[in-house]
Image 1 (cartoon, rainbow, N blue to C red):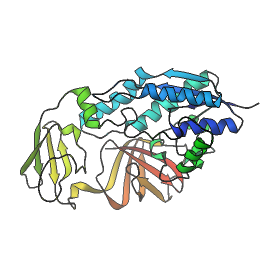
Image 2: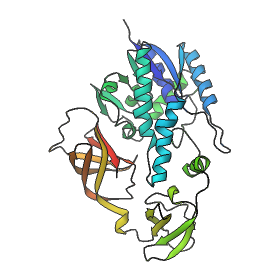
Image 3: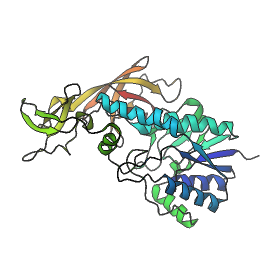
Length: 348
């Protein structure tokens, strides 16, 4: 008997083709639209109704049943508030990673199994082989950076078929089967606010922030900012300091509302070859990292860097073979062994 698979469908081409591929492979497919965020921000209208309409159209095209899971309350507390609180503390959190950990591979996973699913599936560009997370065929689209906190259990019961294809192939498959989402543009930006800039979102949530000084590495005041929480280490755009070489954010003092900058790309505060992590997590149990040649990705689409790992409980320390620029607290450092994604933690 074929297995029941509940596919998380976002209204995009990747999750649409995921449902198509699994149906072609003989699974009994049920589409699930997760209603996580419906709030419009400023002049930006939240596209959830359009996305849901596209999910319904694809479900009709594929002749599969469709469910709606309303996770808006949980999403607010577990993902949105997490991000807002992080910025208030002066760090740069990554809500997409927490969304995967808490919503897609926890709430969606649990409720789907309760409702009769044998497996779940998503449109992520990644591969799961024997319960191990591996990078996608299309390295330019690989999303394992956002998935390293998946639970052991969910890895054994999750399918990610688009990880075996290049993005161009997924588009081609969608067009060949006349799916309504075949030409739909990929969503951009943070998972729930889309095209809206993080600054606009935070102002919408927290209100305008107090202005404060921008001070260079010589102690000179070179400008004014409109809230230190909006800036991240290494940032060069949006400082509104005219003339000469660009400035880079090298530090900030949240209690004093000061942003520190430098024109010197070699400033030691911009570079590091050691990284400390909290909430460290191995993507699969019993991974023996001793004497393994590990690589780390400090930011999404950042270069892989050779490193040595030392773990103490939920804390970890990375020694990098080369210095890396603009390491932002709150982001994740994600570890790889060959093509396997093996773990990571939150940069502190």
